[in-house]
Length: 395
Image (cartoon, rainbow, N blue to C red):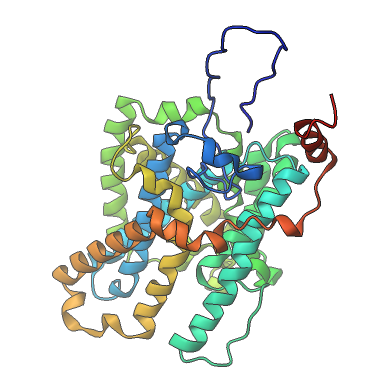
C-alpha cells in the first residue's frame, strides 16, 4: 500500500495528508506493526501507529488470548465440566475469528512479485523455522530423540502458517469465481468425507477451515460495522449464554475433535454423511459466535491495542510453553484440577500470551518472524527503474 503523491513540478501549497482507507497489512494477513517489515526498503518505519485500525488489533489480541486459554484448559476437561464447556465454546469460534480477519486483510493479494516475496518472508520462512524449532523441542523436552523433521507434516501450531500460505496463494481464484463462499463450503464438505486426503500440510484443516478465509475475502468494512451495532451487542449476550449452556450439556456427549477440523468423519468413527452435516452446522455456529465476539470487541485504542501487532509472535511462541507444560508434568498437581486451579491456569495463560505479544519480544524474534532476506530475491524492473530515478540517471 503506497501513500506517495506525485509532484507537479511547480511551487504550490503543500497537499493535505492523504486519507487512509485501511491499515497497512502484513503477509500474515494482519495489520502491519509500527516499524515492522511490511514495506520494501523499510517504509514501515515511516508509518505512524495511529494509522492502524484499533478494532482489528483489539480483535486479534483477544482472539489469541482465547487461543492460549483454550490450550490451558485442555488438560482440565476430564475433571471439570465447566472447563470442558468453556473449551468447546471457545474452540467453536477463536480460530474461525482469526482466519476471517486474515482473509479480510488478504483481499489485496494479487500474486505480484512484491506480494509473493512478502508471502515467502512473512509466512513460508517462519513456517520452516518454527517447524524445525518445534521438532527439536519435542526431541528434547518430549524425550523423543528420533522424532523426524518433516516440512510436510506440521506439528502443533505450525499448521496455521501452512494453511495461510495455501489460502493466500488461492486468493486470486476466489476473486474471479461467481460464488466463492458456497464453493469453499462445498470443498470443506467434501474434505470432511474424504479420509484418504492424508496428513500432508494438514490439508484436512486447510480445506475444512477454508470457508472462513474466503468469508473474510468477501467481507467489506460495512459488514464489521453492522455487527458492532448496539442491538447486535445486546443480542450477543443471550446467544453466548445459550452457547455455553449447550456446550455444558454436550461436553460429555460430543467428541471435541470435531472442532479441530483435522480429521474426516470416518476417522472420527462417524458415518460419512455426518461429515457434511457437521461441517455446515459448525460453520453456522462458528459464524454466529464470531459475530458475537466481534460485537463486543472495543473499537477504541486501549492498553492492549498495540499488542495486536504481535499476535502471531504470541501464537507461535506460546506453543513451547503449552506443550512443555504437558512434557514436564505441570498439571499433575491435584489442586490445579479444582476451581482455584482453573482460575490460576487461566490467568497464567493470559499473562504469558500478553507478554509474548509485546514489542520487546517482537524485536527479539523479528529475525524469524519477519526476515527481510533481500539477498534471496532479484530486483524487478519497476524497482530498478525507481532506483535510477532517485539516483538522477533518468528523468
